[in-house]
Image (tube, rainbow over all chains, first blue to last red):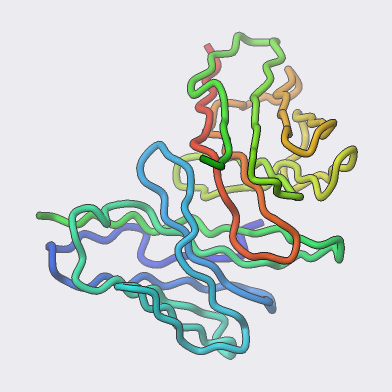
Length: 115
Length: 112
C-alpha cells in the first residue's frame, strides 16, 4: 500500500525558477525522507526531516513538515537543468525494533527543468 | 569506493523461467531491501533482511524468494509463479541506527 502521495505528478519549469513538490501521507511517522532518481538509475537520499521538526535546509533544498496535516513539501530553489529527475518522499511506517525500518515510498514527482 | 552493486543491468526472462538478480554491498550495512518499481507506481517492497539468515516478506512477496547467507549479499529470485515480472528492481541497504537508504543502480527485467 502507498503511504505517501506526491503532488504534482509532473512539473515543468524554466531554469532559475523554484520548484515545489508536495507529499501527503496517511499514518503517523517517525521521520520523512526525500529521494531523487535520475532516469533509469537508483534513488539517492537527499534529506530527512524528523517528526518533531518543522523545517530543514540543505543547500538549495528546503523541506517542511506539517504533522497535523500529514504533509511535507520539498522546495528546490534556483533550479538547474541537472535537477531534472523524479523526486520521491518516503516514510518509515514500520519499525521492527531490530535496528532498522522499512520505508514506504510515494509515486514520485517528475521534474523537468528547461534550460 | 563503497556502494551497492546490482547485476545484471538488463535481464531477459522466458516464460516459466526462474531468474536471480544479484545485490552486493561493501558498506558493512546490516539491513538490505528489495523494491520493485513499475511506471507510475512508485516503489513497492518485496523482501527485506535485518540480519544474516533472516528475512521478512514485504508488500508484494508472492512469486519471489530471497536468501541472506552473507552480510554483503542479498540475491532475489524471480520465480515462474510471478505472473508479471517485467519491472525495474532496486536493492537498498542501511546501517542499524542510521537513516537513509543507499540504493543500487537497478536491474531491468523483461519477459520475452
